[in-house]
Amino acid sequence: MALEVEDLRVHYRTLRGDVRALDGVSFGLADGEIMGLAGESGCGKTTLGKSLIRLDGRMRHVGGRAVLDGGELPIADDKAMNRRRYRDVSIIPQYSMSAMNPTRKIGKLTADLLRAKGESFRELRPELVRRLELVGLSEQVLDNYPIELSGGMKQRMVMVLSTLLDPSLLIADEVTSALDVSNQKAVAETLVRFRELGFVKSMVVVTHDLSLVYQIADSIMIMYAGRIVEKGPADTIINAPRHPYTRALIEALPEVGLEYGDRRLKSIPGKPPQLLNPPTGCRFRDRCELAHDRCIEDPPAVDLAPDHTASCWKVVD
Amino acid sequence: MLELQNVWKSYRVGALGSKKLTAVRDVSFSVSRGEVLSVVGESGSGKSTIGKMVLQLIPPTRGAVRLDGREVTARRHSDRKAYYRRVQGVFQDPFSSYNPIFKADRVFDAVRESFFPGLKRAEWQDKVDRSLTSVGLEPGAVLRKYPHQLSGGQLQRMLIARALLLDIELLVADEIISMLDASTRIDVLNLLGALKERGLGVLFVTHDLSLANYISERVIIMRHGAVVEMGATGKVFGDPRHPYSRNLLASVPQLHRKWSDAATEFEDLEPDGDREADPAPLARVGADHWVAAAA
Image 1: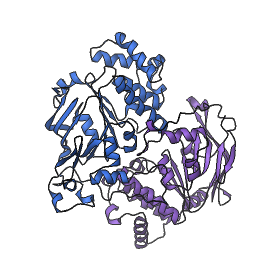
Image 2: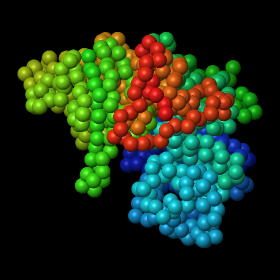
Image 3: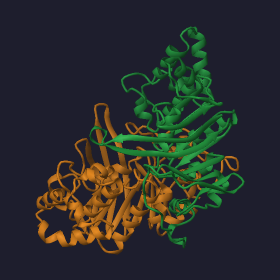
Image 4: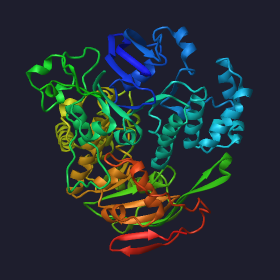
């Protein structure tokens, strides 16, 4: 098991109290696994990604732990975490298009980055150039400023930079969202290639686009209101989901070939609960068609198959 | 109803406008009442520029935009105002369409000031309530709230309700779904469907082919500022004739089909050439189906 997360709780401090963005999240990630992490805005998927690499000032680690390759990640300790960052855990941030310093040439900023981690740019340069060529960028980009690259090129540049030290775990946060279809496909396929080439061992791909993540992920985990509702192999989640939320989410996706006049898609009524004082029991119950009396108690995580889990009372029976 | 005839648009870019970028090249199409026409293409294909020209936010460089046969490019303020009674737009980011300092329903007040200054308060309120109800919103749930208290889907539908306060005939919807969550985006999309059934024409600009497929009768695929393929949705998506359309369709991530399953090879396309030159002419390949000649 590459990554093992147990009962992770991360809250955001606000003036009105703690917002429970991650409220008891447990899952495992196998060696070489690409896991898609999907859900609506505010479900905690980005928070989960960030927790595994760097908590920002508003975030507080309240409980639970994460173990990477047998060693515990010191989530709450920023200094200790700094030694693991980039080397063991790396991230392609959500706005990676603007992740590069606009006033430095790309070669310079790469050298800065490596020096900060105690690595030599000169030694790593041949490998960097080799990887740039792999994603279709020439050595010349190192002499360019970030502004001189197109969106797709910047995205590929950041991908190569984030994985240069062969991290064990890569978190890719909405890396395809700002791109158009053809670039989306190229970027998604590059992620898979990076794993095949051993640049990264395993990956968490955070996205709101289920159809995209289905293309590349081995497994998919669905989050709702700070908790995991279902996790399983990608094919199972898409073709035979068990949790009512997963089902509703997939039902709401338009596809090429589907027309308004033929079949009307349904949205999920209502909106997710506030996480400042989240309700007890199943958090989806206000929007769930199948909700019943039992749902005011916390649903158990039921193992439906060795690698398929859903948290719902309805799957118990 | 709306008609674009041989429309071109060039922007001045670079320092002191030293370079010229031709964003739209020789585009002609029409939108009729009760129809959703989708304009699809990747970033930089010129699709948003078309929306802006129809909304008169920018003038075309060459060619004509007509509404019911009359040239729309307004000379006077009053002409423009009359035009906006009939044509309105909604844009991509609902959060930046509102001023976060003021309550969200302020967008309605602005319409009242410009277009209905004489209307009594109660009548106006009634009109707003009816418009909100027609887009599937509960007036009590959205009025007198700040933008951050509402969801993206609610804000987007409020903007559509605002457009409907005027008796518009054409709605320009530029990527209005892109920022919304999967669970709410379908509400907005179905609303567009309901509007077209009420007789409104909708110009739907999007990069998402599955959305275009779902909602529109006809579709236009654009590349490098020019139309590469257009026609009935079923024909363009079911039987794409231009290599670019085929590549685009093969790239769309789909739920029940993996990229790796499809054996289709990507076809080579001509690079972005001289944008001043006339684009490849469209040839009719079937009833309501036109394709640009591929080089």
